[in-house]
Length: 237
Image (tube, rainbow, N blue to C red; front, side, top):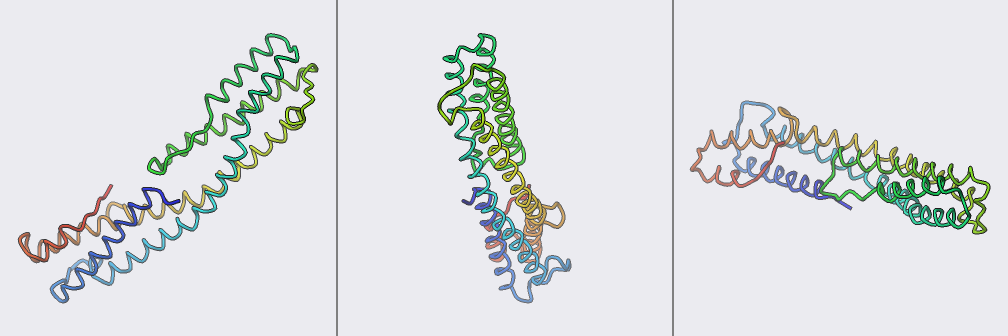
């Protein structure tokens, strides 16, 4: 699923293609001294940006598949933790242990990893989400340790037995590791894409704004040529 970030970038890439087409239509009147503003350089820059966007698009499905697998495993844990708590209570575990179990279960429900909306994409949000996944693993591990240390915890239901809880914990760790690993190529691809788009001196956005300034200088602000490029919008960070 494309995020609003990727969608917005695609719009600006389309604008850059339009800017090239317009400048090319000026023929010999468009003849900038800086080589990086010439038509052939603009086309090369556009090709590089498009390749970087393709790299992001190629990395996205692997990451989404890994995150979906992790989500399916992790969503099993909070309701299961509540059932473990209820089992501990009816098993007659010491009050101090039950209180500790309740505290851990509250943490599990309070730190549940929430999906990050596409428009909130960014390293800060990814990190916050990852901390939440790590916290759930740690809390569930504590819960298992607590019930495993109590001989009275002997549920007859197979899904509540300590071995089953440990199996789920291992699945949580494995899918979490896989999701983190899958995010690395995507993160690197986005870094390279953003460098080509937003680098202060060499990025596509900066180049586009300089092209518009060149057209203004050559034809004037009241010219029909500048009126065309003036409405082709770009936004540099």
